[in-house]
Length: 242
Image: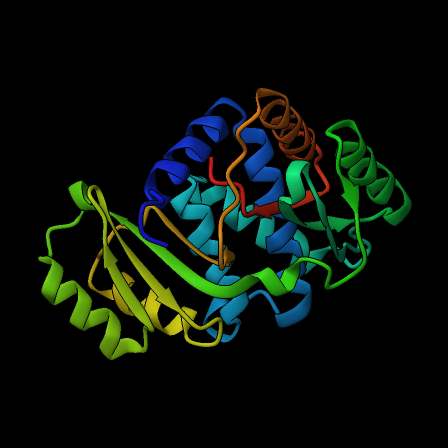
């Protein structure tokens, strides 16, 4: 995994999100609604909701917007029921792509996702066709400029809290956990007032694919842009070495 600047990717995503904050707030709003429906409106008793709130704060979502979202989900019995669906498929040159969606209309979402793959010269596959190429992990990225703690102390804090791995990059620290230990590790860092550029359970590729032809790169970007523009799509994971 060395040689891949996760922080550069995070910053790239953040810049895109800053240009379209409504999109990321819509995504997180749906996650808040689902977390509240599944585990209640009190973050103290709902670890999934705590994780979504942390993600919201990392994306500069205002506190009153977060609280409004929680209250709306808790008080509206007739609010939209979102269903979680995962699609797997292939992009150009066999790149692997996983798409997570929250939708109130499965047919619409399936059609849109299929269309994105097709327009980029890829195809949607069966469940499990590419997910075995990824590991589900908690991933926390810390910007070095935002962190006062030295690397050794930060590493020991993370490992003592249950982290699996700690890596120092040129401009950031990366902490990897199991999905089960993610909340504990994140909350331990939070208690020490450590600012996180990103903190989420994600899918990390075991190997990366390099695209060499301009056509393949254009097609891959088309798939990712179309998926990014779809409000039903929550997250997209791929093994393209950008």
